[in-house]
Image 1 (cartoon, each protein chain N blue to C red):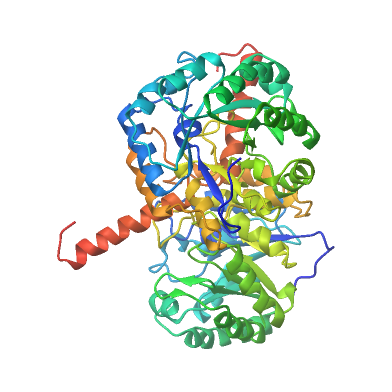
Image 2 (cartoon, rainbow over the protein chains, first blue to last red; image 1 turned 30 degrees about the vertical axis):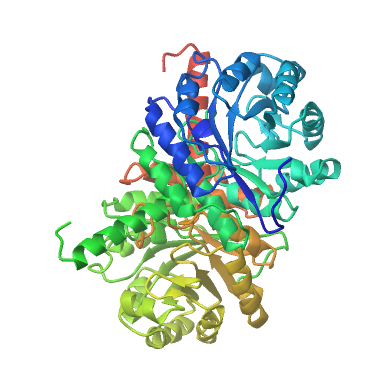
Length: 318
Length: 318
């Protein structure tokens, strides 16, 4: 479990390089991914999900996971996480000195069936050797539970369905479990109902919230979670990534929007919003869509205007 | 003052046809605007801002204000509002049987100076004959105070600066005053600080909040305002319109995002989200930018997928 440095600290876990790029159809050069990860680490994240050691045929955009981990410079004190679906993925991750891995399951049977062709229990069973190996190797283990509010295939998910999955992941040795609103439909009351039940059962330090902004509720849900004492949130720089269940729609809540909210409410994240914008704007030229993050776009627009103003006032012709 | 039908009712005022289209560079056919207004009225809004009777040289996109009002069919029980800057605008509005007008000023001297080349007091002074004429003619008068958190030219605005402007507008006969975060930088704590001061002085029924989503805080600010009992909010269908102070950035909070939040929290708006999407998607083809509303885009993406699924399952080749 990560210890909280002080009680105004909120840990934002950047997941853009993995969750934001995994469904990207246009090829992104490995070097651009490495620059993104390094830029984000310099921005101040203490936890950063870099890639996914899944089968390259299944997720071609993550085929260069080893190359990313081998090329990137690592900062002391930053936890670089990779998603691993099974022992094969775990071994690949270990071969490049990955010191934190994440496993991914769901609160909906229909979702795991359609997504990975097994039951929730089957997926947990497959993680057991990964968890044992990680414990043996001193590798930190993070858990994801997706579809915590609603499943794209089976509809609403009861908060009670989330509890046993979290329990299993914690029992397996996860230091924290991230609860994902995979299709981004949850609203503040859904968040409150879930947290009422989850936090009655588990320590708040073991729970992260992973909101998507597909239905515009990302920051509103985060605001509601803060009232519950939740201090761990996942987000994606620039709002990188889309929603695989609704093409053209938004995926992860944008990191900059989260930081802007938290900064304004007096929370300390240790992350520089400007540095995040800088890191992801360099990647943006490789994308075939416009990054959806509100604060990202407002910041970039302001920067462009200031550059024009500066050029004009210096007598330049720009 | 509008009376609240019951205490779970929230009134959403649609401002897209005015606030969302006034800075639109590409010409929009008047017929498309009329269809938009009519579609939005059918969606259930009880208050709908349709156009602006400003000088056509100053705001060319609103030059067809008379034509819009003359062509549109009106529903009983819906208040169709137009912005009027002065008596000339008021007379134009009256000539087409506009029965509600809005006047627009700011909490920042620097903003009114740069925007309309006069002091805040000067702008209020210019509204006095409008207010007298409206009272005489039985025309409802709405007030706007912009830059309630921050001015794009002078920086932060103190909540205390908002109070006297609201007072003047109410004294003049406004049935409600809409408080606008013109550049969309406010965060929930700013909203709380403002409402602490404003609601200590004025009846909650006289206050509407007008959030922009430029920095991604639209729904989070609305969530914070609901805790204060505020039940009047302005929004723009599809997130129509941009931010004139940050080109490429988002303007008004999207109506669909607001409705999705309110519906989920159990508030009754009387407005059909689907009908709003339907009305604004017909207009979207005339825009030179992609509508930014999260729920608008998620809904459209879902509709496209369902249409493809339906075509596929019926053996079609679509």
